[in-house]
Image 1 (cartoon, one colour):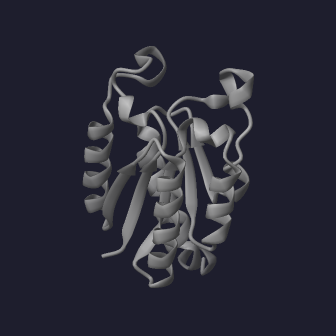
Image 2 (cartoon, rainbow, N blue to C red):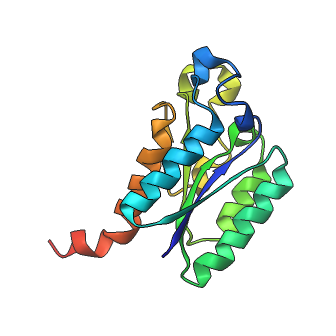
Length: 158
């Protein structure tokens, strides 16, 4: 069974307690649980990983790039947190593992927030972007990943 990685960056370990008016009361553990259940439903093994360290996120992207080459991975759903707005290294890592698809995912609508959150270094390397749907955005991103990267040939035949 192929894998989907749910990758979370800095401060997402604080979900449920950090700014609940912005991010809600759902914990990261809750998110990981419903992503794993959804993965089973759609036929994928889901691995979840969170780090507050940029290097650990880079290492995970690199490792999944190798698994993708071995045809063991469909892709990655990635909420880079605040590193979205600062990390050229994440952009480079995602570009470095192409054609593995990475879907950028944000719980809040970053475009309605502080001006510094309006720019993403990750977006130009992402295969798609989901913003503003709360924690349901992870499921939307997973479904988009499956629809876009497993059914392309079936849609082209119609």
